[in-house]
Length: 110
Image (cartoon, rainbow, N blue to C red; front, side):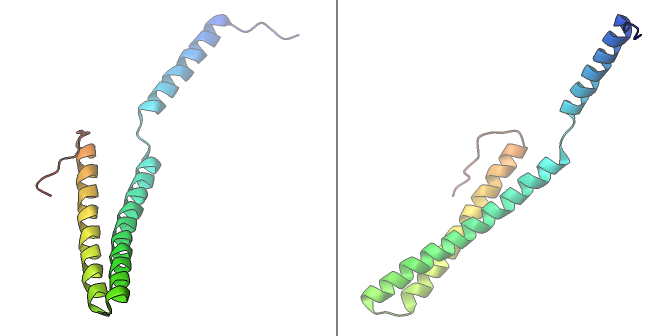
């Protein structure tokens, strides 16, 4: 028949499992960092493309209304590009501030 398990050995095993789980929780997850970097990259790409598309849309619409093709479209597309770049820089500063341990992003003269 089966013998009764030794309670001291069981407690020692439970303590060892608890220590290993606690150590595992303290270890950083490198896969999580890669996901965060990927999300940041996509966020910046989307911000740039959105700025371009919005600028192009406004310029095209104004050109259609005023008949000044293609000048307003070019001007607003360039302005959209500049706005996208500014937004990307602001996002990078925000991420840099979070990595430095400061949760409030700094707005340095933007």
